[in-house]
Amino acid sequence: MAKPKSSWVCTECGHKQSMQAGFCPSCRKYNTLVEEVEALPTFRRGPKAASGGAQSRRLSDISIQDATRITTGISEFDRVLGGGVVPGSLVLVGGDPGIGKSTLLLQMCGRIEKQASVLYITGEESASQVALRAERLGGQAAHVWMLAETRIEAILAELARLDPKIVVVDSIQTVYRDDLESAPGTVSQLRESAAALLTWAKSSGGSVFLVGHVTKDGQLAGPRVLEHMVDTVLYFEGDRHHMYRLLRATKNRYGATGEVGVFEMRSSGLEGVQNPSSLFMGNLGSRPGVCIAATLEGSRPILVEVQALAGATHFSMPQRVATGFDARRMTILLALLERHGGMHLGGYDVFLSVAGGLKLDDPGGELAAALAVASSLRDTALAQGTIALGELGLGGEIRPPAQLEARLKEARQMGFKRALVGRTPKPVKVEGLEVVVCEDLGVALERGLG
Ligand code: TYD
Ligand code: MG
Image (tube, rainbow, N blue to C red; front, side):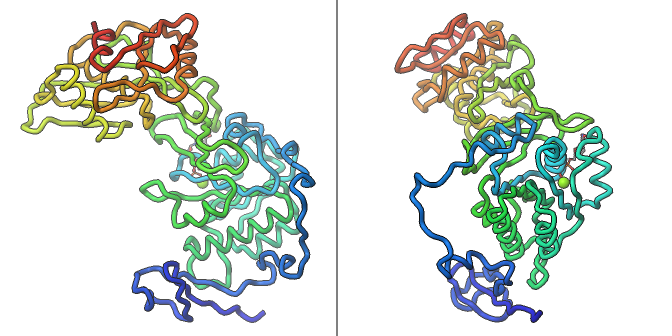
């Protein structure tokens, strides 16, 4: 077959030329030219549309296939997917190297193989390495089909032959199209390979899981393009030095975004965590410098322990170090403590950290962070079983976080007896929990630390 002609197209201005170049002669931007190739017959998208093959139908006549979701057998995974794998969907799983993407997907294959045929395509590891991991996972996935291949043409041929229901491509960065000049992992290779797999998924009804690498700053390597093409984007995150892992849906055409699954990495693979609060919380918070907050991860409240240490500084500029907490927000909290708590922090180093390596992005954790710092500074512990919830405004006012009641219920379930919160439009009541309403930070400090 004749080699299809390549052209180079500028992603900024659309300029097209036959040669590769470092910058676009039209708009003069650098590194914007990407390779494009005339579509192969197997790659041609929507040929029927042009010949009038598809006809429009009324929305009400279209049957809903939601009932046919395939459950992965891993409840935390199902939760993030929105209740199982939707046939014909394309799911991108991103995450740092070594976080457990391959492990999770292989475990899923092992659980699903009894219901549907599964093909695991490995481009990163050899088939025997994957077999070794499967053995480590307790001999799961014995009937999964394995393919060590990275050429998309060969992959498509195998897909046509085997007609699997679930396909894992580990990773999409290793897959390439033979007739493209650019190296595997570049934007044009990723786009073409993913497009081919997308076409296969939509026409065959099989579901494809793509493993994607992330760069240092946490973006999926190269391709925002991929995020647009796929139905669901899942990020696997967590600290490699800690055992827990969070699987988060940042895009989901078939379920809620922001939904989170919590896993623990064991020696025999990943295990779903039913009660994540127990993971991030040491005790009921009765040491100086400790305050418990309830953050919301997806639809699920999780209790986290915020720890602070304030000590006299030996530097001319006091140290401000935040781990798992935004450093700038910490500075604002310190300013609020000076203004509304009458504290003088200029002579103190302040360290703030969230236990378990979790990131506390939720503004509802601000009151707890401020109380933790104040508690360390005064060397006074909050009363045993106290939780603090609220976002701090610059005027020192405390705003209630989203879904306050759900968070309070979780706290009650975990044995907390008292909650410091801001004023809410309607009074919130949770059986067995004393809800202490504080007008502002000054009042919260008084009620919390006496
Ligand atoms: P892996 O799934 O290979 O990560 P990724 O595909 O995201 O790069 O996970 C590898 C890490 O997980 C590795 O450091 C070893 C560890 N691990 C366990 O702790 N227990 C296990 O059962 C397995 C299979 C891996
Ligand atoms: Mg891997």
